[in-house]
Amino acid sequence: MSMTVAVIGATGFVGSHLVPHLVASGHRVIAISRDGRRLPAWTDAVEARPGDVTGQNLDAALAGADAVVHLVAIARETGGLSFEKINVDGTQRAVKAAERAGIKRFVHLSALGVVDNPELDYLYSKWLGEQAVRASSLDWVILRPSLLFGEGDGFFNLVKVTLKWWSPGVVAIPGKGDARFQPLSADDLAIAIEQSVSDGGRSRSLYELGGPDWVTYREIVDAVSSATGMKRLPVGLPIPLISALTAVTDKVLPIFPVSHDQISSLQRPNYTEPDAFERTFGVKPQPMDLSYLG
Picture 1 (cartoon, helix red, strand yellow):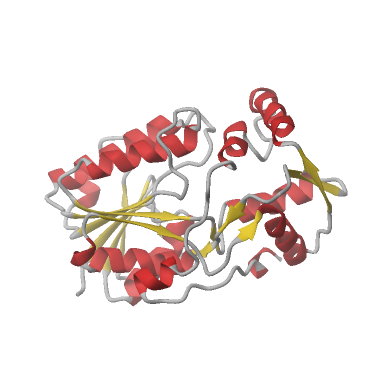
Picture 2: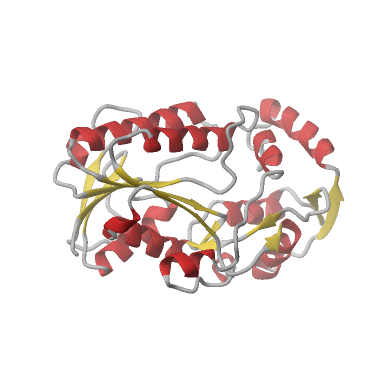
């Protein structure tokens, strides 16, 4: 069934993979971003509109939509943007705007590991965002993916930056490096989002998603090293030591690639059952491929 889908955060990493997939699946897309810009690859099936989750102009941006996909979030507080302002209040504004517009279908992108614990700032903010969605009158679907890879990603490119600029011959590995993840392709996530939009039977469902394999943090660093050709000697450092270091760098060196909150979040599970995606969406997800980093 063809629909008009409003994507809030259409020009971000996930949006850049999602919008073409929605169009290829026969949908019309309202691509919402703060400045209303278009990406070069978009066709005439995409209408770009300005809309900001921190402002009051979402109502106009959502006009004419049959469904909303909410992608906007920050993983780190920078540039005056806070988790509360974007991940919590921004989600609430998107929900209220969809309700005012009479739109029922609402797909919200969350994250694996969300928790009702204020000591973990990012994961707690995503938890609160989920609660805003759950408490709404909408036919919502919440997706909790593990780490996402693909052109323009955040996490794996951050590891690349760390290797290039912050790792002179060696790279610090938190603890034993055995924190487990389940990387999922952004293109496979796009499949899950489109099915969540178009399948009314998924209303008021929450799905935890990952790729076909569990990988450790150390294995991820090795994979990024291999893809980029930047060989570094991995050195395990106690997590309390890295945590204490990042507590300082957050204050005096904000460009440091890892925050105190991100180190703390490593203690939360970031994986699910290996067949979760295929069982839920009928598609076998791609294995982790970081060749685009080269």
